[in-house]
Amino acid sequence: MSNYSATIRWQRDGAGFSNGNYSRAHCWKFDGGTVVNASASPHIVPEPFSKPEYVDPEEAFIAALSSCHMLFFLDLAAQDGFVVDSYSDEAIGLMSKNSDSKLAMTKIELNPQVVFDLSNKPTTEQIESLHHRAHELCFIANSVRSEVVVTTR
Image 1: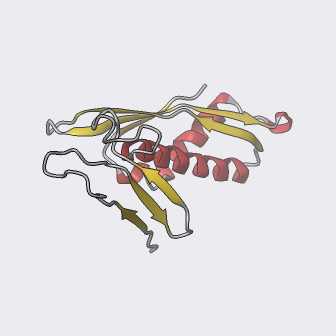
Image 2 (image 1 turned 60 degrees about the vertical axis):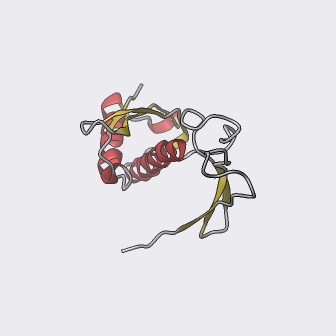
């Protein structure tokens, strides 16, 4: 088993609190030393109490899922003898009420664009199989209840 850690830090800095007029800006520090500025989503907490230019937890969630899928896809493609030149994904998350009537990220759509080296390009069926296998192996996808759809082109 592996352990992962992140340190989340927030400070009031003298602003009001009980009235809700405080900044939701905070930082995430990861074990390798990377620090990411984070905030509540401006869709949930209006400015100036949120910072739209910072990463919000909902964005981080879909980015983590997309990244996990990509890393497994690249590994599987390499194992199958295919060379990937580039991979990009404009992942989309849908926040709506779940079956318990609670707001949740209910659907994540991955839209990967993969460019392969032309010397050994996989067929459409092989690409779809790589994505299916990557989804089955993705730790993040295996950890969530949201519907995850991978749209290949």
